[in-house]
Figure 1 (cartoon, rainbow, N blue to C red):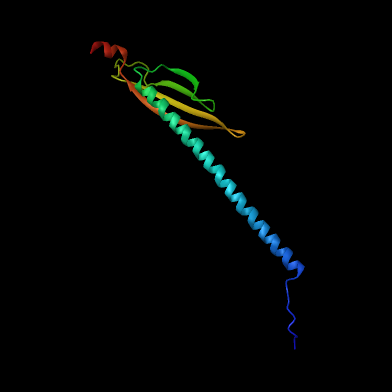
Figure 2: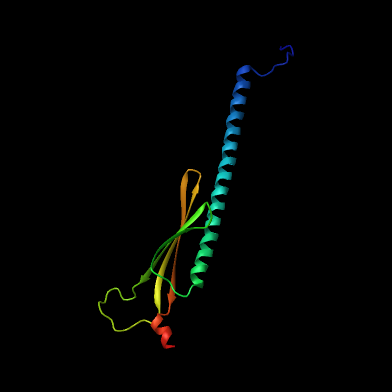
Length: 139
């Protein structure tokens, strides 16, 4: 018969329990910091999209597009690169007498920023049509 001596935890059981608790806390802290990092990246992409929308609206308000590259800054953190190219509507035919009533331009906009040690970017493409200047003069 046992005499009713109270038994406690051994030192090994306490050390193992503390080790398991420590690993669990480290995992929870890593998940929390990863969530914060992803939240910051999402905020940066949202800001880039907002700047891109504003720049595209500026281009839409313009009367005519000019082919070429343009670079600039939105603020100290975000900058942009715009490439405008005229799209050839008849790429396979050498000579065509028909003059299309509209000109088609491809606009490629890249918003770039530095996030920590990495350079991030968001790229956008759109098409715009314009009446040729000769067609506008006739109307």
